[in-house]
Length: 292
Image (cartoon, rainbow, N blue to C red):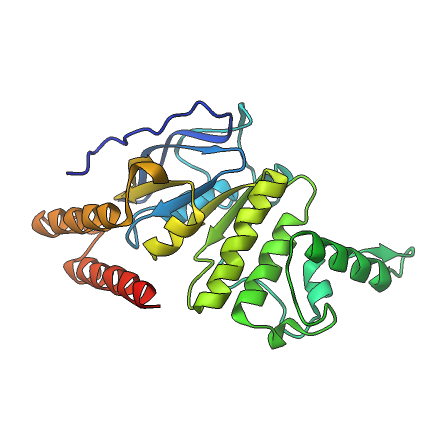
């Protein structure tokens, strides 16, 4: 049975991020309840939970979009309070959402420098395309991202290549400490999934960037993550290193939890239909992945 209080993984490694007692409500609906979470330097942390469990709310707090009702956030041991999304970015937190925020008609290198272009001039500024092309090629080579050409529009890239460009744009910033990835492997084939997994692992190994990954496919998380946190009904209910839990145990644990929620009176947060669907989709995802 999953406990109501999180089982803590060891924190003997220096944490780049620590969250303590974070809570947030939207009117009568409580999205997060006294959440504690930590992220080690160079670590990939997977966040698992049903739709509506609080994962997205937590990510939006870390990106500076939401301000929590209660609790504290520490970066490298120093308490911070994000005033805006830009403020969070200035503290080294970058996010890649599912829509990727790429401009299809622009080239790869223009997308890498989107809103942060190299320019020259006074009142009338001009793009330094040669400088951006050289920097883009150099950085993509450094992180082993292979694209047909940095001049090609991103609309002509595969799904995996587009995701890689979005990740590269986020991690190109010099002050980046934490990368948040929302469903980075959704609707990808095995080859493209492998590309992104290797990219994430390489970034953590080469740069000490720490990554938080939200993904509903547990098989993906076991391939890329060092540790798993389960969020249910606004609480972190499990914190395990991957060496301490198997894929089968995690699936069984989640299924048992969903069954308990179905047996409880409705809270207005979950429904039997959404829970049953979540179980079916999760188990189906594992079966398809295993078959591949």
